[in-house]
Every structure is written in structure tokens, then in C-alpha cells.
Amino acid sequence: MSTLLTINVINEEDTAQNMFFFQEPAVYAGGPTVYSNSLYSANLGPTSGGSTLTFQANLQYYAGIQEAHSTPEVGQASGYTSASQAIDLALASGGATNDFTEATLNPLALSAPTAGEGIQDGAFRIAVPSFSPPALYNVGSAVQVNGLTTLSNFVQASPNTFTDCQPILKYYVQTGSYTAGTVMNFTQSSQTAALCDFTGGYTTAQVKLKSNGTWDVSMS
Image (cartoon, rainbow, N blue to C red; front, side, top):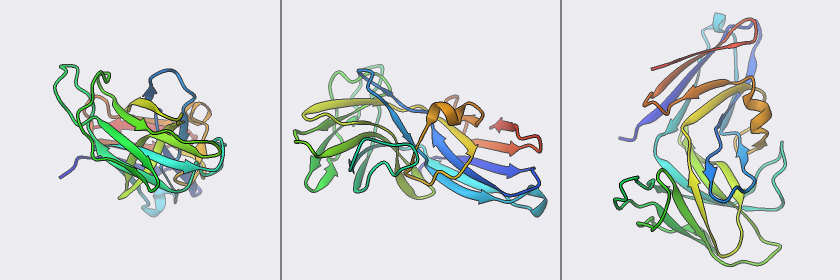
């Protein structure tokens, strides 16, 4: 059974709050512009009514590709048709892992991963074939959240290139109403968000929105 990273949220404010969840952007080789999507959103009532909001992300890593109409814009859906593929990360030891996948564009798909060469420790690689404008594609790290796979963070693909992506197991909770798959401003939203850092091997975060509007986070 796959490991689930779980975030349980309670709201100690007097009124219901919209909450959304997002991930720290992965590291992409070459320094391209990185965009972030919301992964999940829901309305959470006050804890006085017994309400708890639960977010669960599969620890399995996924490569993702998505067709897009235009350059990503905050508050808008990042794209439409998408494909994802469970994938491994490269090992520092250089041992063989299934960390390389190839995209096809018609139909949109990612191949079953195989062992790549020269991929940085902790990253996976997506090979994008040649294509011509006005076609646009987003490629990056996808996450399976509450059973649905969503492109979490991504770059705009260039034709006939490799995209190397190193995911980061840090998730955030913030008040707001960005629905899953909607582009959000990571820098702005993360400044006052609750950080749930799973990089140390934790699997559960207990998050509390306190009555004064600040957050309390406990990891286990």
C-alpha cells in the first residue's frame, strides 16, 4: 500500500474559512520560470462545530504533462488535457531507477518510466518531442491528492528537450479559494501559510488556524 501524507486542519476562528493546499515548487534544471497550481480546496467550518478538513497526498512521485491555451495566469486553470505517470527519483549512488519518461503529444501520454542517464540525485526527467507553435505544453511534478492526480508545479515545455524536475515534500495550507488545477502565486501565498514539512520522514501534520489568524503546525 502506498504511503499517504496527511494534513488534518481545524479552524478556531468564529466563521467558516475557504482553505486551499499547494506544494513547494520543485527544482528545475536550467532555471526556467516555475508555476504552481492549487492542489485542493474546501470550505472549513469552525472547530466548535466539530469540523476537520483532511488532505491526503500520495508519497508516490508523478511526472505530468498538460496541454495549455496560453501562458499560465494566476487565478486561471493552468491547462486542460493532461497525462501523468508514476515515476522514481534518481539515486545519489547512481543505482538504476525508473526515473525517465518520454512524452507523446497525439494522443497526450507519458511512457512507462525506464532508467535514465545523468539525472541529478532526487530528480526525474521528462523528454518532450518536437512540436510547433501555437501548441503549448506544461511539464513538471504531479501529485495524487485525495485520489485525483493534479499537476502541482510546472514549467512551459520547449520542443525537443529534456525537463529535469526535483520534487520537494513541503506542502502549505492557506485561506483562499483557489480550486485544484488553478495557477496561484506561490511566493505571495506561502508567506503567511501553514508549512507542513514532510522532508524529515513525517507522514502526518496537524494544522490549526487559530482565532488570531495565525497557524499552529505539529508534525508526526
